[in-house]
Length: 504
Image: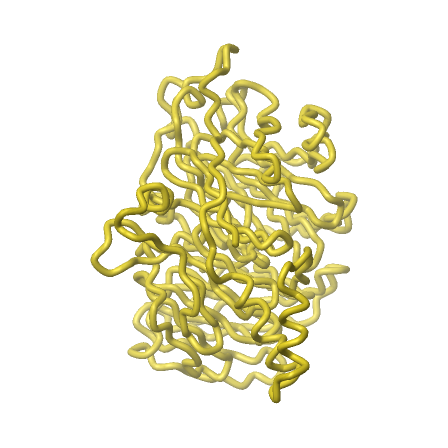
């Protein structure tokens, strides 16, 4: 069965995770599964799953990470999904009084004010500074993979603290106010960090890593309080889930939406659910028939081994593990499953060359969308606030509701990467805007486009004139993107390991 992805970010976002299926992270919860070497990462602002590849050692050659192009990173074993959640914005606004005056004098009143303010904040963004994840002055012995520049694959930020992770597993921490690189989160020379998760519940960052001492075959989780990073003391963090056997096909998934962590220990085939605030064990699930677990708001969908003509499913309460519903979903025997996703009470099922089915698991009602209208996407972003979902396919973005209706197409928002690299996509906390690295006509580099999800209109764009070489270079080969809503800054990472800060 192929998995789709659950979203996150600020969906863009970048959610952190490493498994091969859904992806979730400060995108508004972005859960994404991305095939990384030697791991498959699930990134989500909301959830992040990380799982080792079956043969991790095969991904390494004399201690060096075999870098893959972005198209290869998002292939097997699964697709990626992103989930967006509500997140409040904060920070000082230099134009606040002017906009309050406009609201008071306007006939449109407060409704116009609430819609205008976030868009106004994102106009006229300019390049403010450049940060470097590569330490070319380091005199200590370093692993071969850390001795060269590598693309930035994930960015997360909290306040003025920003973390950038490269494909080779090096994670650098910066203070964006001063432009100073504070430290590296790698606590040993042989640590490869595969994913980041910003845990807002306890003001920490969780790194998911592999190490040379076990041939990069198992995942190790570590929690580092943000204050320790600001003090340049990342080594004072502590290990998580040390009792778990996180080797293939084991994984760990962080779910910001429900405040939970899901682990799967391959040795005894046990799923465990942990509290995200203090990492205490809540309950465990043991059933050798379980093939996959999908997390949604307040519930989990347990997918069991497929039988001829149907797939057994269970919906359980994520707080207690209590079974709420036990049922079967009928399938076409000869068709493989393209994806099966749970969103609140709605179950989305798509088989190869068949119509999309949207099932209400409470009533059993089914809505079908013709296969000619709904082609299998490479990624999803579920919008919990508006009860809609975004789909990504061949660089195109569309918005659907759960009646099976196409709600929005975008006028000027064609993604740069055709394989839907969700590290270059951010959904704002109020789920009104999508920020992405997009194509420009007649230009060798892309632009940062900011569009309305409801209307599909691009109202702001970061681009450059042909004679602006500094901006042009910053917009070439962008490999990751994050919007800091508190500081109203956009961060973009590129193929050379540089991070650029954009503000107005």
